[in-house]
Structures are given as structure tokens and as C-alpha cells.
Image (tube, helix red, strand yellow):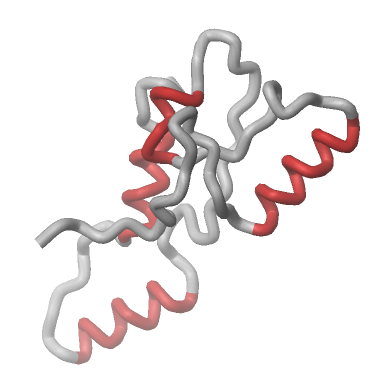
Length: 108
């Protein structure tokens, strides 16, 4: 079974995301309104960082809802798993996905 990914599959060949978190869209819109061009600003698919981030990239912003995996939902799931007799010591998916982006060779 293929692993499901929470990011929509729609993105252009150059990595531009068809949809994104509201906060990222607002940052992009503000930069465009300030005078940056579409060639200078992009919200990209995290699976296409190798295509979208290059030597001319100056800033990379990352939008994450729960980067450490410690929000209420994750904590509640850990409690429920513990009550069911499971030891929940694994890293949360959100934390894992955030670290995957931060450790991407294009970001380092």
C-alpha cells in the first residue's frame, strides 16, 4: 500500500503548489503586492524542493501547523493509545514531515 501524503498532488512542473495553507498564500500575496514578481516568489510543493529551490533562492519560508507534533490532537491520540495498552513513543507524522523538509538537501 502506498504511503498517503497530506499535500495535494496538484503542482506545476516547476514545483508551484496549486493549493496551500492560508498563511503561506497571504505571505505570497503580500510579497507580490509589495513589488516582487511571480518569478521571485512561489509557494511550492514540499516534494519538489529540488526543482524549486536553487542557488538564486534567498529565503525559504516553511508553513506548518504542528511542527513538533505536540498539539492537542497528537497528545490526545497518545493518551488513547496508552489507555489501549500501546506504547506511543514514535515520532508524530507532523514532526517527521517537518524534519524531512528541514533536512532536505535543497534547504541545507
